[in-house]
Amino acid sequence: MNRPAALLALLTLSLLRAGEFPKSVSAFPGVTPKIDGVLSPGEWDDATTFTGVSEWIPQFTPTYDDRDLSLRGWVKHDGRRLYFAFEVRDDVLYGIDTERWLPAENPKAHELTREGFPWFGDEMELLINASYKWRGNESVAGDGSSWQMVCNLTKSRLGGVGKGGLLEGEPRRSEAAWNTYQRWIETRAMEAAARVASARSRPRRYVIEWAVNFDPCLEVEPGTFYSPALGDRPVGLNIALGDLDEQERGEGNFGHFHHEDWWAGAKNVRTQLRQFGTLWIRTGPRSKPPTR
Image 1 (cartoon, rainbow, N blue to C red):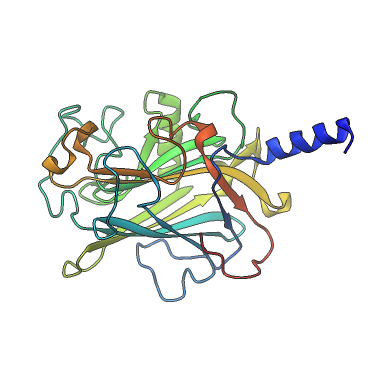
Image 2: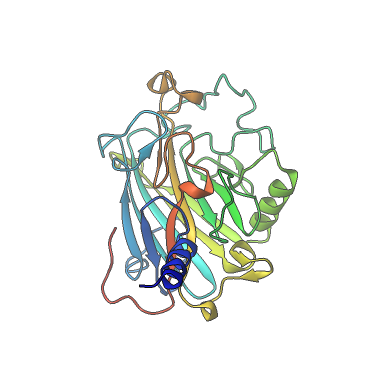
């Protein structure tokens, strides 16, 4: 290969990487699911599946036992929205099996303001870099190009404290990002439902279903939102599963979190865009049911 061709190949490869972490998953077209926190029979059969979290990256205490914390995940799209579902097995549910204790770092953790901790509780986080670009070690911008949102099991913007669902994520220091996230939630540009399974089930289990509109939440270029007309497209992706139990089980960790496990990245830098893995949004049918 001559030098100009080699340089072009290298440039093309770099542009196709949505993140530097060597992990990827594909979202293929599928049937539109109902966002109700219930995994109805057949509803996610056409989705790509993935599992966690003992092999994920721990921010706090590593997870070794699937009976302590584990999940199955699904992802697909219907040409208008991107869909995720998570079935989480957790031995103790914060605020349900425990008191709603507060962290010493923030007695306002449950306030639904920029002073609160939206991710404090049992929760999932989605981080998307739709632009699949970064300059250095920056984190999300808090707009359609890149964002970080939270689905908490026991509090939400629309339901208040006590009802699970979506909350504004990071960066909370940015009023513009906060307002954008809140608008997405209130206009249903992004929706999520969180539901606990039967109280008799052991280990405990809960389900989160999550929908993300391509427009305005996946801005792949300034003013351009993803659509199937753009063909197969990579975007940056990270996913977090946060786990609070009894306060003493998180001794020594920030906020007394027991676990916080990440699909991609490295400890302490997992929210940097360059630490993300890759989500491929595919336009054609999959050849066989993929599992990662």
